[in-house]
Length: 175
Image 1 (cartoon, helix red, strand yellow):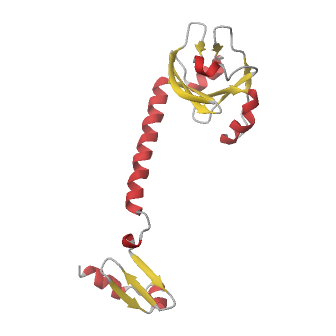
Image 2 (cartoon, rainbow, N blue to C red; image 1 turned 180 degrees about the vertical axis):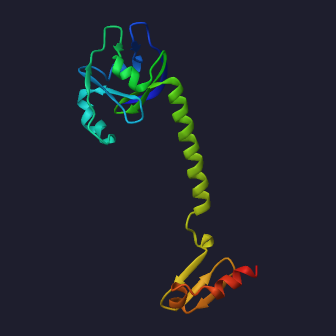
Image 3 (cartoon, rainbow, N blue to C red; image 1 turned 90 degrees about the horizontal axis):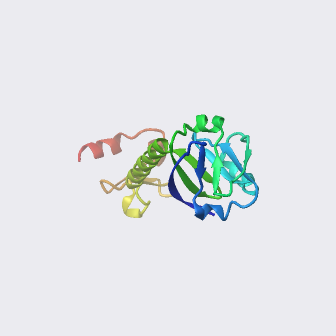
């Protein structure tokens, strides 16, 4: 299992040092592929069946050898695809590792944080569907619509469902 975020520098030989915490799970054959977010995916070949479920199309996986010092060489086509220069981030993502350009990684993290804030804001708007948060309920057996904001009920549910909302709108406007 790969977890954590590690900052590394690519050496002159276009190699990166893998975190020691990851190396124990990287015994055997490993592969690298172009990830969907302009990063690289790296993991043991035995994990690829699970990992490719994240891809829209089946990726082209290149086998990669880890040297004795725990480094992997990143081929030019992969460096160019992911925009890898000197500073990189190696992120553990459970069953695989993602390799990012540091600036692109920071940008991706900011976007995720912004999305999280937006989701939280929407959750506050939606509420938790508690009875006290209801705006309007429709009771078909009793032919009644209750507008909870003004604590008033209206009959003729069929007409209201057809768009005859004047009594409700007038009551809401009078607030």
